[in-house]
Image (cartoon, rainbow, N blue to C red; front, side, top):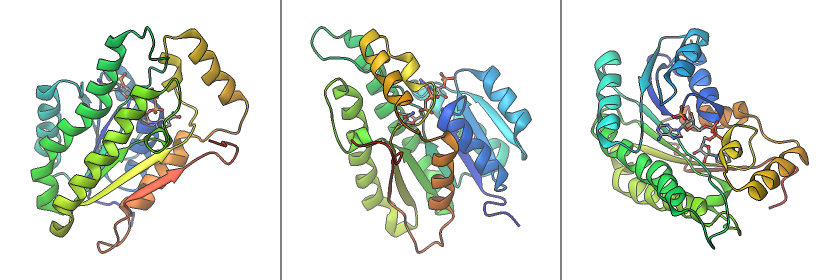
Length: 244
Ligand code: NDP
């Protein structure tokens, strides 16, 4: 008997890093997993590794019709939706002065609006099953710092949206969890276009024992497997070596 036998989970951004590890962890616990992202080839190799049934979804969270189609495909295949993990995100760090504002648009569209679209599309099904929404935020959703203003704004926004959602649905049995990781070794900082910021992120990574994607996946499993009367609303999890 596994902790999530028969539960249906949809995970965004499952093609790498935290999303990939979480998809595997949920599958290991017996969940039927729908794994969404744009790099479908990576999802297909993930599905081959997964111990349970895994549906791969070509998903762009910035596109409302793609999000609605992913939710419909999940429910069509597995008959319900119990768990939504809003994980897709990108961090294009850099100074505000002279920034390429198209990077701001991409972050807001993906991290903030993308997670709102998935909640909008999934909520009727989550209400039916008294399900759980996991919103992957960040320590940057608690503490802003120079060079990370827009990314932080999206993550603070996720927390605000999650608290509003929690108040709207908790009496109907839907639980909302915000997970706030510190530095995790993934591809995330590899996408930063500003060379100085990218180098600073790499230097930070090599200066500490970073978290592994699986550390966050375990926190997600913990939060979503509590008894129905227990709502773990927020988990802040940093590497021991991370000071700020
Ligand atoms: P990765 O870069 O490894 O993963 C990001 C994932 O998001 C990929 O699967 C990517 O898939 C997906 N993604 C990006 N854009 C879209 C889109 N438009 N539609 C669908 N999926 C998309 O980084 P992490 O695993 O580190 O990041 C996962 C989450 O964790 C993010 O929200 C990030 O902000 C958060 N986080 C990460 C921390 C870290 O230190 N690594 C710390 C705190 C929070 P694809 O490109 O195939 O679409």
